[in-house]
Length: 309
Image 1 (cartoon, rainbow, N blue to C red):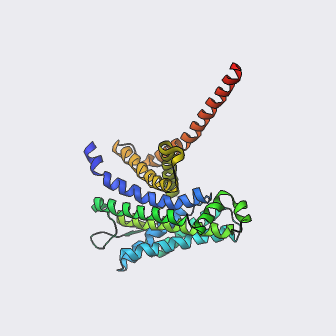
Image 2 (cartoon, rainbow, N blue to C red):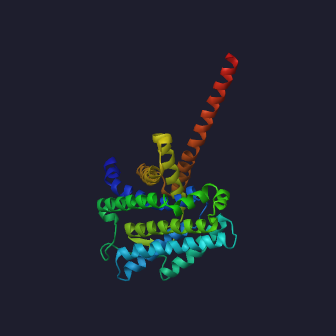
Image 3 (cartoon, one colour):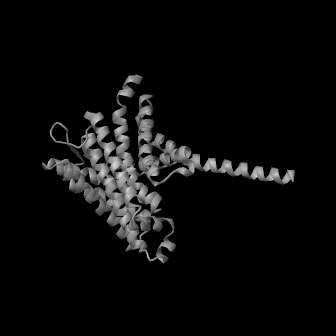
């Protein structure tokens, strides 16, 4: 497989990266803004795909499919929120419980079919890998709209309350903010966006699989971390919230370009999870090692200054 094949497939790779970047925007809300380890996204991503597939197969438009997938994801996030805020279940366990429950729910939604094909030959889809250039433009426009809406929303009073809850829950509570309500609402928005991305992904691939969300949290975190490292490297302290969101999507694109290159190099497909772990570990380590190096240089400079004095 030559370099021409890699380049020819790049629009599809970038489109898939943007779809996962959209999913990562949902994870960004819980991971970065709420400081909440939500593992339910592996289930809600597949929920979005299952709902979209069944709506399209039923003869309805892809617009309704995306809308209902968004609502289904919101309900999944609400369940996690209730488990955590009402019943006091720790965030990680609440997400795991929702994820486990969603596997069975997703099977029921798909009428007990683990894989539901939605061929572009039979149905009108929002995006398709067959028309990768059109898909690239479509998902890019959708990503820009979502980033713009998120930038606006998290600048409103309620959006600021969600951000304050994640930054300092005690201070937010002292200011009269209902911390539990904000956590639950953040989870609702997060999983709604994740399921929306799942609906796009199912149409892009031409099928919805109940296991399609497996590992989604890892890919989402990889996108966030890669984007954050690049944003800090390029803009340093000049970065703002809009740029941070844009670089989350950029992280998704770069992640899938890395994967495409790995496949192009004919490395074993069975090692994809290993390569993913290595990529995430590298980008996680970069900020820590950089800060450690800067700290060491600062200490050395201070010691040198005292010695000269």
